[in-house]
Image (cartoon, rainbow, N blue to C red; front, side):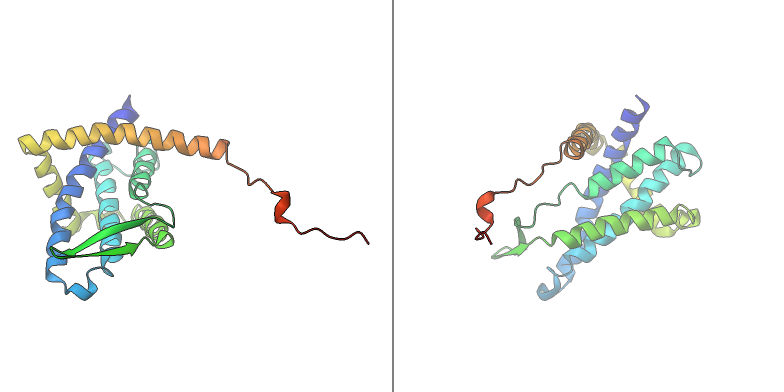
Length: 201
């Protein structure tokens, strides 16, 4: 039950942070010139992941009173990583990026870059474990304070709590799916027709 409670609270924090980051990212994109809005997508995604990583550590620090490799931190980091990779699609997937009200561009997802951002963010978050003073920075304190302020807003707070419930369900399903994939990893069947016939010597 403690793990489920932790996942629920993390889901609520993630939802609050996502809402806050949506407006920050929107403001940045409105300020940026049109030519660099699309290329800046991955830079903003990296910044989002890094800030969220510090928020996860800050959350654990406030809950436990210290940072150590225990069950809570392990579950938090796993949930954080699963949250980052939830939207990574296969290499042939496409998504639409709205540039303005009159124009849309189809941009191919760079899967390798998406995975690189996820692993890099997790690595940096692990490094910050050995430098807890980074969690006292003005930026981390601002994100932590604003996220928790949003959670205290009556209507938004309930929406975020509902999102936290769905996050728990989604995390469990993704974890079970990953286990099934590892246990029953599909093997590529060899088609005899793929080989050329050789004459007997």
